[in-house]
Length: 252
Image 1 (cartoon, rainbow, N blue to C red):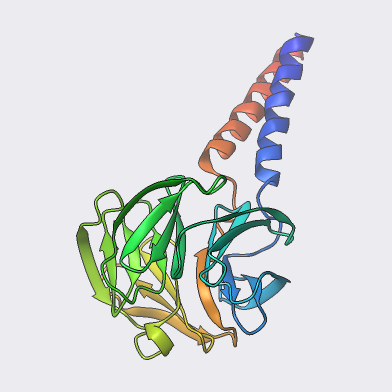
Image 2 (cartoon, helix red, strand yellow):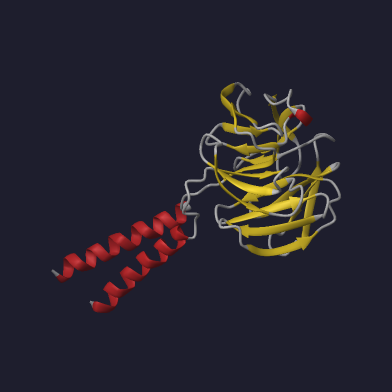
C-alpha cells in the first residue's frame, strides 16, 4: 500500500516538474528586436514584460515554451536561451540570409533566400529543405497543419512538400518589408509584427484584422510563447492525482 502511494505521488511530482519547466512569466509571445539587440517577452496584447540581450540584429525567433532559439543572418548563427536569458548553446549554419524561424514538428525551420531549410534545433544538423514561396519572406509560423510564410501575402504551405495550400491578405503590407514577424496567436489566428512597433492579429481564414496596436519595438522576429504545460503533462498530472486519491481512499 505504501509503495503504491509513493508511486502515485511520484507521478504527481513528475507532472508538476514538467509543468514547472514552462516559463513562470505571463508571456504570451516572444519577439527578437533590433535597436536594443534583445529578446522581449510580451503579454497577450504584445506589450513588453521583460527582455534580455542577445547578439546584434537578431532576425528570427522560435520557442517551444521552455527554450528560445534566436537566429542571425549576419553571424549565420542560432543561439538557444532559457526564458531568463541564460545562454544554453549555439551553432553555426549555412544560411546567409536568415529571415524567419519556426519550430515545425521538432525541426527548426529557417527561411533563407529561395528555400525554407529544416535543422535539428539542438545540434544544427541539416535535415531537409522545401522551396520558399517568395524571395521576400520575412517570417514563418506553424499552426500544427500549415507552415505560414509572411510575404506580400501570407501563404500557407504544406510543411513537408512546400505546396501552397492557402493565401490570405497581409495586414502588415504597409510596414517596412511588408512586416518582419509572424506567429500563431491562438486557434485560427496569426500575429504580425513590424519594425516600427505596429502589430496585428488576423484571421487565418481570410486575413481580416481582429485587433491591432503598437508596442514601440523593432520586431524582426515573433513567436507564440506557449507558456502552458503540454497536454501530455496535464494528462500525467491528472493521472497522478487520481491515482494518489484512490490509494488514500483505500487506505482510509
